[in-house]
Length: 275
Image (cartoon, rainbow, N blue to C red; front, top):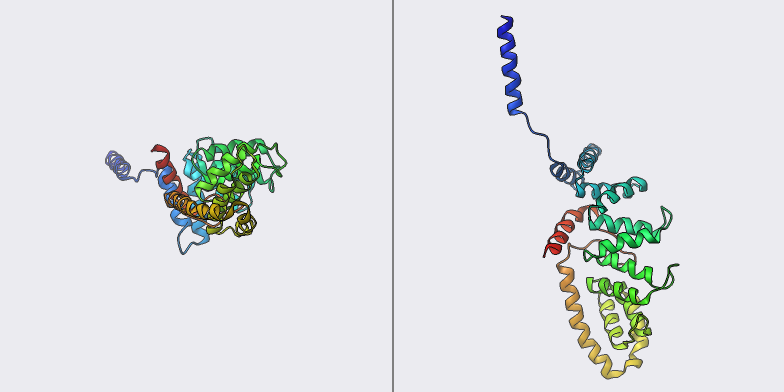
């Protein structure tokens, strides 16, 4: 009898192991966590479950989970944990984590400002084509930031951000071109970028335009307006191929993609880099 019971127990154990659900992968944990966090009827229990899933996926080295976890910790002002997870993902070349980390060090409001670290991470993110990171790099090379001024570098980074659709970078670029700082004095191109910036919502650019019209003359103004249409169309085409829009994406203090945009942005940028 005892032998028969032992055999039955062994059979039961083997059948359980055969039909046991395999553990979820880090990517599955991440997807489930994002679904819980972005759901319409999110509860505290859902949030706790999502955090546990993200911690599990991030702890296993899944980059997207590490970045998302950094975003959540930053939102709750737990900056040291945010930096920890951003750094883990940034080291694996995740541009959102690099941008987020660089922005924290640039602003210096919750940690001591670290220009060297800011430049390092922002340059890596800008290499992925990110306009927000390029804008901060422009500021770090422009005057008034307490850093060494390098107008040629400022023009380079403002131009990348301007082409990506940031109207505040377009204004900054125009000012340097107008003043001839950075190696090029080009009032007409400056006027073009101010027109584009104004059209994209930068009202400061409108004020600058009024002071410039007399300087470049009627013919120059008309030529600049025709050129501005082409530049605006090119910029808007670039924006449409980006990962979407979010609040403060194109502002005078650009913000990284929020949690809801991160999946799309990571995928889009990866495809662009591959091409």
